[in-house]
Image (cartoon, rainbow over all chains, first blue to last red):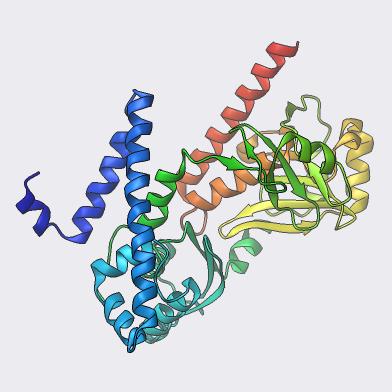
Length: 173
Length: 207
């Protein structure tokens, strides 16, 4: 890939390519080569993480630090990198609450209510109340899931709990 | 805000580079081999990685129980369909274990949002044990009776509880829609195929 293509690649394209390359590396039979490449990647990420952590600390401690950080996380490429290194100034919980608050009017208009039940470092759980909405469950789940994972791609998993009472009553009967 | 369509990419990249990292005993922080012992905290059902010394000192105590890999098929298990109905478990897939904090048997079965837990009637459990005495030896908090009665199957296993939670996790990851979708039941079939393979391999080695 030429330097020019690399520069014009969007974040999505880079992440998709990253995904493919990880899969390729995973499938290499040569264990030494595989582990060396992995270690190299870990080391480079680590070097960046350490420097970025110090950079964030310097920004946070300066005048207007908070405002500046806000501007930084508004830039999606920068936000992605801060999220990757665990340096996003907002906690997972705050980020999820924010996206839920932003989406809620849209969801409410369709009779849906989403609420965050718990958020940890690796894992969050939200509850979806459908109030009899007949939309296909998969689509709803996918839509909510992708809105939330965008705000927290650093979580291993986001669980959506749905009002399943009717379903279990049916199976039990 | 523009969207990034790559799911939990940050978490996956971190895990990808982390696989070579050493693991540590969660009690004494000593580095441990990739195959190591696990302890279950009885009250919280949390799993902890342990070095051999800590596993020996703490396992089987009041607070922790040591997990031993176990997968036995119970071939002549005695449980009628009426008895099963009487346990009021809404799906044909569940595991039951003796819980120290609950002071009795607990049933856990999979649902779209993860594990659903319900106390298991004590009289039903005593009837199960008298019909199947081998259940009396279940190690509390770490071993379970795994029941698979799906699509006419009548399979029963004694397994270590981590395998049960693995099944629940598998179902949670693959569940789509109201009834789970084809993918999840295929994953469950694969799970039981693997379990049967493990049981057979072990039987060949020991028997």
